[in-house]
Image (cartoon, rainbow, N blue to C red; front, side, top):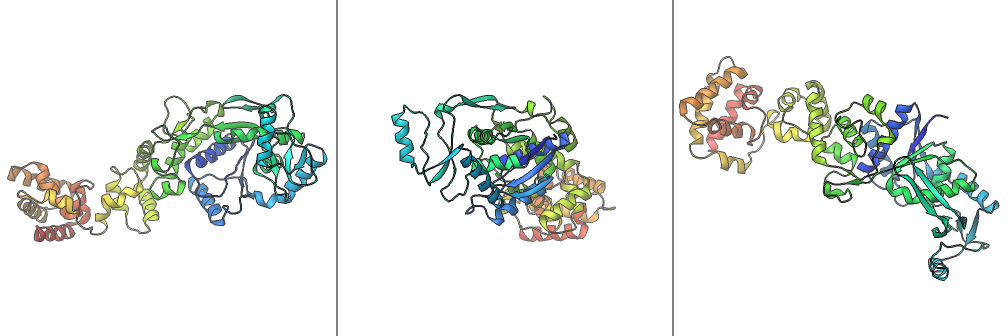
Length: 443
């Protein structure tokens, strides 16, 4: 039987980094083994499971480049099948109806020394699964090893409400069974659910899948990953200008590694090398600064035309190739392009702090001299412009920044830009002189 895995998000919000990693690990496992990946939308929470949230999940997976072989399958649409299997457990005596309340469960535990709740069958009420009195359910986990859950401590879990609508752990077990899922790869926070799902499968006489529970994600401060650590969802990473291939590479490294030294990996290398046995059970650290560094490496490898196309898609405007090529070495994300090099596309307002810092102590005279040198530079190319401006520095007996920084603020509005000589040439003589003249008039 070929390997079959599933990614089963609940559509209660955007796809977060942890969910994206779970999807990626399942995808790598399926693609590396010739198996199949099933997408299941666990939408039984009807109040929070909106069409908009489903669309966000599909959009995030599409942007990440994670495709699937079956689905999306909507859990809510399988209600009839769930009721059928629930009735089977009732008919076979593996489940019973009970009106026991939370207080009844608490009283039972107090009376029986803390052992798990066991109820008596009633004519109506919620449906509980019978847990054997003796023994234990052992979760055999590829990553974490064996975890033993003693039956004496487990309550008979509620698997359906009184109206017949089933609860999460029952629905998941049935859906995994019907889909022929061979490996369940999911977050460590689901480990406590696993014995309940195993008990459902055991009551049905079904073979359980292989389980692998991924470590939790923490921020650099060692606390559970949250919004305070930076971008929390896939869409936020996209909007911040990260490349999907860089994000795939980085989140693959959250708890797994190809070897002890490889950081940058192609999809083919990740697919060929992915192995659950190399996934750590220790919490993985999501550090957006490391992602920025990695993203910068990917950005600098893009051909200029491709970089421009990515920028144009993000910004919704064309004609960016020349500016993109100039900014490429300094960018770590696509979103950094416009603050860095947007002035090459259209004039930007002056940063007043930058102006006040630079345009003083004779800066106007230095800028006027730079203007004359630019006007006389012939031919108008990077080498000639650089020689002309360095000539101004030498002639005036000042440091290079005394000439270059006022010129940079004059043409870009800021003290940060791509190379000053390349920027002047990219703007062209006429536009450069017009901006310098405006700055001289303002000084």
